[in-house]
Length: 185
Image 1 (cartoon, one colour):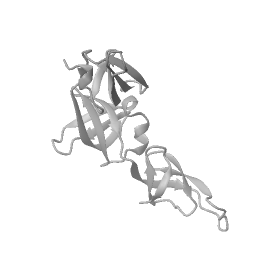
Image 2: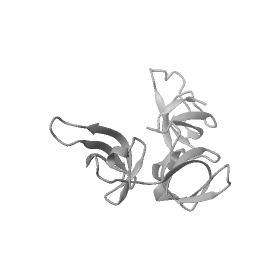
Image 3: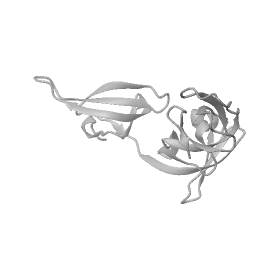
């Protein structure tokens, strides 16, 4: 089993019997004290992060991970189906796992899924996605005060504040970080 000195940024380790993603690692040797490794970890179960200290020789379990780029196929009754475009293997993930990512999933859209020992644990979205506007009020002529925006409903059900010139049927780029309008696609 590897020691705490061997963990690196990007590893997934088992800490308190749960998988944690290693965000930062620093090896420290203060003056007359023993060396230790300080790591910033994020739980893959609940998303909480925190700082943890390990003795430099303390054994740490590094989990086997695999990151795959999957294509979103369809959603049916709270089950989201993804397919590996190379092996054509399908994965069905429940709505709780997909969580807020569902607002950015469009058919044939690509996402990265982190697998730990064959089990999916995290979805990583691209920084922006192209979504179609399905419902939007008309902008009023003469209403051109600086940066006036209106709500628009996307094909996934997400509501985004867009400029007045955006009409129904247009495809726009939306940030997956905060759900904001980035421009026309």
